[in-house]
Image (cartoon, rainbow, N blue to C red; front, top):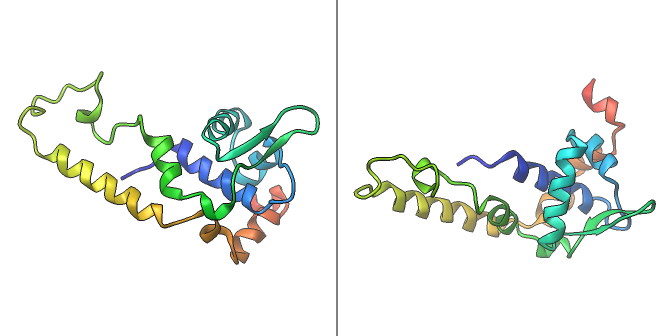
Length: 150
């Protein structure tokens, strides 16, 4: 199982917001701390806002913050919502499926079960479990951006 870059960035973004619960963080800040392009980040912020994982505020004093408590954000839910239209294999793609075995292949059912097991395991992992008492991650997010690249 491989997650998309979008989902990877979304989790980094949510973790950064979790470390800054008392303020709005800017896209520029997140991009610098998480090594993400601002243009790519904007799309993900928008989607996470639509899904209720983030609260977004536009304007000069705007930024983003978690849309709900850390303990209520399941990594499995985030993955499901962001990966729902990404086919696991060619035979899962409605438009691009050219697999000649589709009618008789039993692998599709096994893969469906495996993906669901993957998500179920991540359902038990909440955002607070990723960040609470994680001093190493706090140090990474607190370090000046150029210090991380050295």
